[in-house]
Length: 293
Ligand code: MN
Ligand code: MN
Image 1: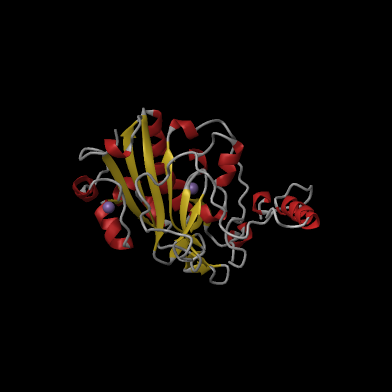
Image 2 (image 1 turned 45 degrees about the vertical axis):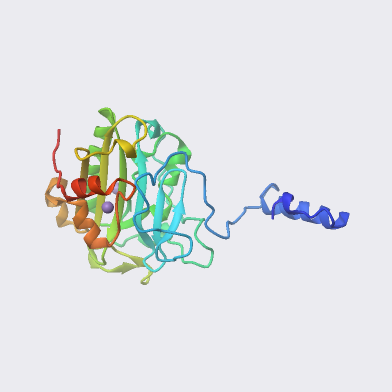
């Protein structure tokens, strides 16, 4: 559809028509809103998959469908209507004073014939619109913050889970960043069925939006620097948690839910930290870290 694709052998009227069509399709004309017909891969400003693509997400598998944003990367499940995981790099470079956008919206980059979750699908369900990549990790600009409100980054989360135990871990991540570190974070969903403020549910939106049974997260912490993957060693701090998606889960703090990356790999079938050497993976994936400095 680009102007470059016009053949030199075509007659002039065809060329003019093609150019006009191209301009219309590219949204140059006022009022024409281009609708991406497929997952438009955006350039990322950061390497959110520096530690690997845990499930080998790609554009060919609807259940492990790769959504590449400039702000984070997603593996999405069409069947479940939620992410399998979201991966992002967190550093002070992403922080600023943009206000919370709160503009939850369907992800326009999903294939148009797929069901795209709407914000109203969460209304009065007893579940929060819970971020995987948090709003507060992306407040360097209004656009970055808005990107976290795409509903492919959001899952049905028990309100107390979202506002207490999960939030406390998010806050702790940012404390680490403010203390001279950067982090690679992978957050995901596991299983089906959670307990919100209206009780237990397996799905919302007439079965098209799955309530996950738990939310898990892996945080790899590095002192701020460059060549990050090569700096990961046997002593690198890796925090892993798996927290049931229930109101009662918030009766304990996140340290009560620490686990190992090995355990999350067994549970999910994914290979986390796959770009790290095998010998280092074996060490840091077996360890359980709940230390708070
Ligand atoms: Mn949240
Ligand atoms: Mn691994």
